[in-house]
Image (spheres, chains in turn red, orange):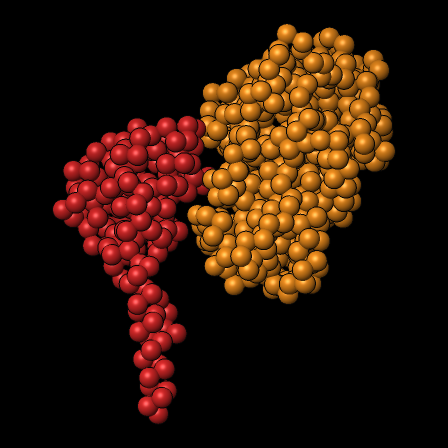
Length: 146
Length: 415
């Protein structure tokens, strides 16, 4: 590798790293972005408002998507603001937007916990700007070799 | 054409039944129906196999939301950065019926910008049909969707030819919509005809009967002058008369209904009206379309879209948005009004190949079961409007079955 090529490559890598850190949220859901107490409250809200369609154990049905496993696949890589925003607007299906922002955050905290994401010291916020700094992701992806 | 004419099939059925009776007569008392020659019962009634209306034979209760847009389906093309999004959603209760014609409009728009590949988002009847139509136009197609066809809302419809059921409101849709509707309906009708007579009956015809002890008149939709509000003032339709009806535009090709004369009515009701109607069998039809899609080199990727910006991340630069009710959230189209519908299903009864409406219950015998829809008295297009509850209610179906069961308890069926 010539020096010029090395510099170009290093420059590109640096550029990518810089753009990632600038655009990317600082914390992912694999790093503890909700509290256990919040998830416990969310579990109760889930049973009251969501379980009728998505099932008491989040398994969904033939008609209703499960909120485990596949839910992770559908949302991985997205900012938490999108996750909470979707639930705020579209759910519950029979009365969209009827839950408060705090309750929606609690329900999402429960879903994170139910999907194996660790709890942390700080509550999952309900404020969109704060949520935008968090990213939904798994601790490790198991992808095929390139 | 049971009960209307005497086809060869009816003759065969009648003689088979006679043969069966002859065999049974040896074992004495069998109080069974006795069809005589030419498909008639001893009473003179035309012979038609009765349906079993038994709540213990319910195998499914399905609920779904029709994506109703007062303006009619959204079919425009929308540039989004370097991506062209062609919308194809919001077909109300007419998605199945208009699927091919609507796909044609969307694919034609796509072709005009010369893509070699297109993305189709959504895999209900509109998405899957659009994908296949795009392949038939020579394009390489990937479907991106949360679910494949047989888990979408489309298979929770009733699956009959109902091309102007909750398709638009007359005023918001405007005078030009009739022409677009007619184009979609005519193309779809001809496309579906190419599936008739295939194994598994993906598309089929059967006779539908309206039954009553009161004279049956064609349903009209007069405006109620005491209702001052309308969609224009409330954002929701307020009465039946606001809904657009376009079916008369294609009555030259659609079987029309006629009243049965006394002696032609195979049911124990005083009055009957009948028409042949096309219907779609979800299982065989869905399999055929999926097979064609894969055989044509189609790919599927499970994917959930969360905002229109996600369309831009696809490698294909022409994206056809076929997301139905989900478009309400995905592209924040609040003109979509949910209209709830529910069907119950009894085990298949292929020998009873017909449908009927009686006592505000619709029944249709299909290849994957006997479909039951139960309505309150005089329910029309307003029934289910702005109801997005998708939780099935089995008791409603049980009630429907009880409402029609007396029809088949009549001694007529054994005479």
